[in-house]
Image (cartoon, rainbow, N blue to C red):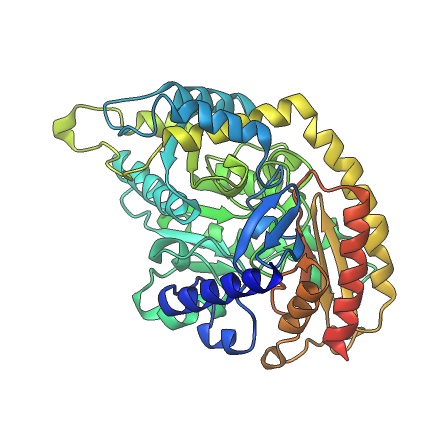
Length: 455
């Protein structure tokens, strides 16, 4: 039996490497790093074809909220499957989409009144950029053509979303075909020069850079786009909510849209349902994806105000309509998964439970602060990050060419945990159903991974 399983595994790996070009991967790495076909998943665990199991400590890239093969979400998708799999959303509708739109609006601040369905996170960002630009054009502000983003930001891989990102690893190669964006220094608290300065004070001080740019160039700025509280692909760098509050005031003062990219941080990751809530603000446009379906199917939405919606509401011949679309916009199966996900938030009191889980994770990870090659341990809600550095005091990073993160990744695989470090940052972003015993195992493996990667 064991021999048959090994034969099946080897055959799948051979077929995979001969036909699939994997995302975010240098395929040559698989000459030395194993490709792992997954046979099944249940809860926080994934199982391969040799019966090895792995804790999915990164929620399969930040999308899975309630575990693999969740029985309730499964049942709701199966129920919908017997009725309708998909229908175009132009001129037609269906109950799962209507229910989801109403529920998302109800979860949002009172001024958010409309839900526009897109396809995935990157396409939501592109649509939000187009919506903002087109709004200003419709209402007569034709000079507004530019966007502001933060340094170290990441908003997606399409040309539009990549244009307003600022991580060279993903962006530099394509610079000549991207839209010019105004980049402002991030309030990221890892870069504090003085440990005696509070996160709030550092964040507030960094806001001056944004203020100066907007004051000078507001007449040509459509919107400022920001990931609330955590720059996830930007090495899980974090900042204080006061920045969002100051940003909302600035946008109001100078007639600029505030776009909240909640794609990675939304649906409970930061400790509240949405990150912007912690600043008690209302963005003009909110982009949602990833966890929206509990990790099952691709779906994204844009939430916005009636003020923006009404700028497009006109006679067709005036050509003011927002003619943005995707074939699978508001897919019925995806919307059913999303509604099931929201059901679980309501039934299980997830946000409150996450606070308890996050506290336990914090207690367990805090010991890493004492390790010689750990320059920072930081946490926002259910996102925890451990930054490795060559010199702890100066925070001098390891040379990226040394690929310390890959060493940590390999160690994790050998010890039943999927870690996928971002450069020198090992992060923990698990499904919300993870229990204390599973957390303890991850902590032990992360400790081993740190020591293995820094020796």
